[in-house]
Image 1 (cartoon, rainbow, N blue to C red):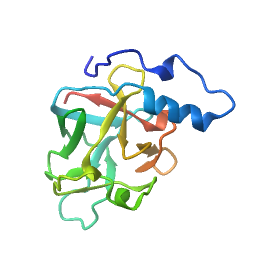
Image 2: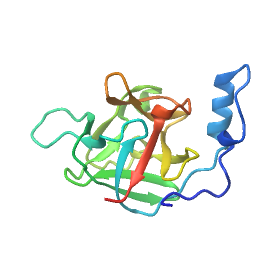
Image 3: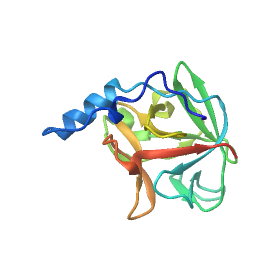
Image 4: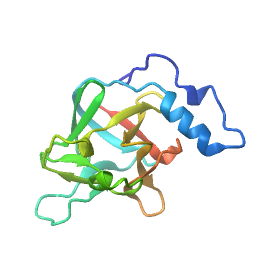
Length: 169
């Protein structure tokens, strides 16, 4: 297994009751972070095995993150369980630029490295082999919108569309 966990994630042992939001916040705050060795990976939505996380090909003006039918590796590098995700082709980093404004949802982009927390991600156990939630800020996660087939940041819910599969290219 690529991803390793210190203990089983609490979300696999607990179930929500009447207050689902409080349950998800508790799980997010008390589930151990996942560790993965630094290296090159393919990242794809748990719910879509035909696409991979990608940044915009060079020559386009937008910095928005997309999904691609082509396998595009990313480089994960960590420091004290915080990860930076660099797109191999463009050398840009995955970021959530409006995190500074206290935003809990919005577009995710790629830009040059800037050494700030808008490019710092945590991997949270998703309870399945080689799967994790990509977390940023307080209680926010990288989310795959299954209807529009786009990627964005939303509040963490622990839903399948917030799980990401990591494989070695």
